[in-house]
Image (cartoon, rainbow, N blue to C red):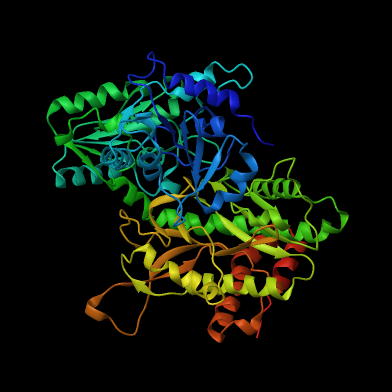
Length: 617
């Protein structure tokens, strides 16, 4: 259902001229998707762009002028945005060659000498400076609007009350899952501080804080994080947290009796005062490249270091305990998926299985598994044409039956104490067409091509992306999303700094041993069907016959162990190596998941697993 945004836009346009909130009348106002921590997924209180535009996707930027409202989003969300936005809004298809960037559009369309406003706490320092330079080159100015204009309108809206900020429990994660103490992590961070000749580092990304201090929470749905900041200096560690979230188990974990150092806990709202004090100390302060303009600007420019933090890379390279947890949680997760697919196959003839009831059933199967803590993102459960909407989330008014006449795509994942899962499978419960089988097989070839490749240590992700697309390109097909993303360890399902995409990532440190990535090529035919096959893979050492200049070579090892539907595979399009890879993979699925299903007494699901993993010749 589309949201009528007329009243909201009118109110914001009035505030853009109101001297109470802006120093100069604004010709344009930017509403980004993120929160003050540059989070991908948001608490409801921070869904400002969704409130003002009606678009519910996780990525996009709204731009409001006195007579236009535009939304930039990428290819994952083109169809969804068109379905959700009313006629007040114009969709700008980001990353397409013909689509101007926000800065280009502003320069081309605003009157000379215009002022463009944005909340500096919601825009990263890097993005702020890039847009500022672009606007100034065009004769305009980017100005900080300290009071968020969307908040002003939202807080006065009696029909859509603005939610309160969450204050959920924060809890320590056991050492068996973290593999390291927070003290050892802080020691490594301080070594990096000394190397960079910095006196302090400000962590603003919520997963950075959670990982460093071995804490987890639930302030944002699907992400086990909590609203916080953390500052590490050469002498102290300070956690900025809502006082209502401080509890005895948290305090005990951060103030151990047998350790010399404890973590100082201060109110979340005190972060700006503390950072301002760091700026007055004269030392260099390290901020993440995702830290907000509002935070970084509190320190004199000559004292700031803005780049990827050591915590971000430390977190991306999993230790032995974390890697063990990924293997174990994926076995349990795969058992849940085997039960789910068996359940669908058994009940599809009733006509009662829908996208929503199916996703709910899968969640219930996952809840039975040890260490389950919740889903890792809203399940993308799409039947037929809904499967072509890349980040589709079924709603009561879009819910379709899962039938034997259409393809079905399910992209889902869970949070377990020992790891995070993210897996996509596409199935057909009837008879797929020859064309559907060809498309599926070409996607599979791309997934196998990436999964089995060998590459040098620290190879950039964009260099690997082509391997997943080349078999689609050969027949003129492609997909409009990245091929792989990092995954957190009982943390965010999308984790940087590395990724596998056609876009060059300036902060990519390269693919390294111990990282976890998704491998997820796809193909989507608007109004017809969607195909995506996604496994999580671990970056492991490759044994090669030769060693050029003693270069360390790497490859990928499967973490996800869910069968790939053979009914959709056209074996004539596969090479012998690809057939061997598929047969070996399915044997791994049997070997890892079969014993658990047997132990659980799930004979029907075990029979389904065995049937779906028969070797092909």
